[in-house]
Length: 411
Length: 151
Image (cartoon, rainbow over all chains, first blue to last red; front, side, top):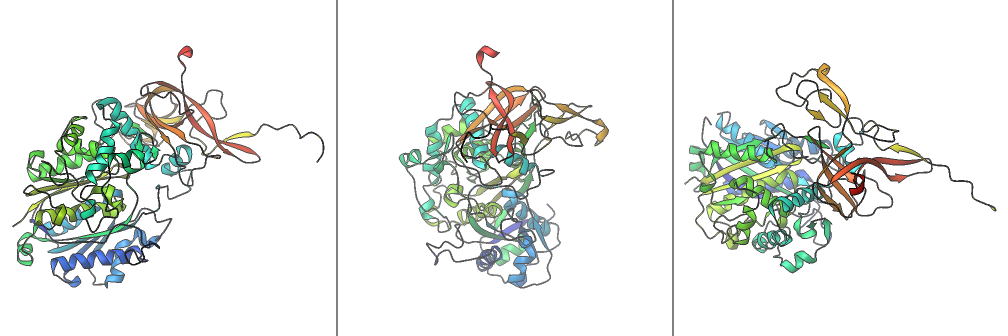
């Protein structure tokens, strides 16, 4: 990159459902732009700068615009600026499904790295807390997602479950392994003020939870949530003047699939299979790219935030991030090596998507917020025990979208 | 009204989305597109070849019927009803699978049963009803396990 870039401020709202009639004090009625304003305000406070110092902004685009938010869910950037107060800066709205968070971080980083500006903001707000995701049109002529859904009714957990069953068949993953993911990733959940489910679960509780899509149980898949997060980046030299602990961005990349990858991605009805092309190639492509950009290997990574949408994801994405063969991630988990706080390679010290529920476009930024707090040593009771210098986050989304980043101590 | 009910007229079977499989047919098959140059197959059909190295020329594309038999790559049972626009009346837990076909394509579809399913078992294409009204039964394609003796 032309110029080095660092994170100078992060902010979030608590994940959940806005409004939650049972807990109106914690979860009042809030629109998506309102949630975004709260996250931006927290990030500005964290960076100790003002809204007028933001020179460019990138905003995540909401996917369920037919259900709520409408055109302002798509043109989210200017809808948020309308509440923050227009300052005339360049604002771009970006939709990359669940990979949106780090995709917009990339856009903000590129704006600064290129020299276009010195300080840029990535923000995403989402209201997805309504159960199974669904198509957004009734167009049986051209919307493949609509065709898929009315002809097969494939929910997201159904896709995950099919991948999971095949992994069990090929790699020997057990039902105990699947339950153990929830038990282990929920350990730090009680200590994260931004998590929706601040509870640690037992094996018994996981096994007692109802089967949703065999072999995945309710507590082995993530909920859908509302949430918002914001990350402010600055040119590195300027960042060092603004804050004591700038978090250096070693790499941020977006990955898309390789032709011939056999994965039948959500929203699609089929895939082309070419010999030798791996599954989940969008994720492998993003992860390989950030290692290359950073000049690093998995051995350099001290802590990981990955998309544990289900227990299957935990293993599949750990494979991608650590370059493991299927079955090895299960062994790491069983041995406690990926324990979120005490592990050799702590995974999801935030509590992960299991503790948050997925707020689609905001999720990737929430991961980055957690890594920043871990690097600064500000994560309180969920602070990982080992010394953390380098951290990696990765998210994957609908229809072949993936993004990843590597960040490190910049002081 | 007194007396016997009128003889039940057989309802017409109508695909929920038209054009995805051959219908009406005794041996329904999925309709796909294939590149004459590299053999890449798309379902649903598309005007262009998805191979990044192929020329984007609709004249290179032919419409084909996919093999009716394939191998079940994996499957799941959905215990909860998916939200609209999906409709199955009455809803009961059902299986969805991914099937590898000889054309080098993996295709999604509902399975006709939730019992005795195995990875890599042979399945065959059929159709099945998801819901009906006074006039029609609304159908989709389904994968049916091929019984041992039929092989």
